[in-house]
Image 1 (tube, rainbow, N blue to C red):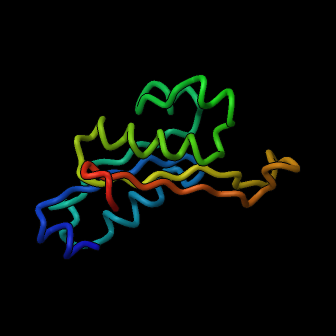
Image 2 (cartoon, one colour):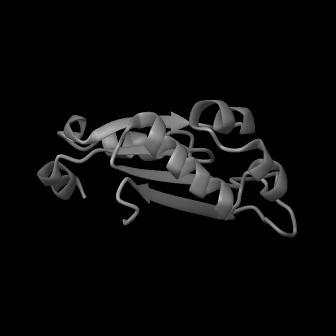
Length: 119
């Protein structure tokens, strides 16, 4: 990924909930990542998702934070806020509490977005 982004002059951003910045940390552990990593958003709370990257309160209310619609909005919102070329988002139920029958502990959704609309 690093080589392809650098060759294209493209950048990537992250929007993370349950991982708390771990993806951004893993990316910045790669030598030279400053050439293609724009920034990371840690949006652990619903308020942070709305305020920092524009996730709709209605989407959060109707689907819950751990859902496909939310990670899609997270990726698109991060893409716009960072003005990056690609975005990766994640939200999940890390546990040990907080799970439900519909969304048990370990449920994780990932989202990806690009300015071209193609991954």
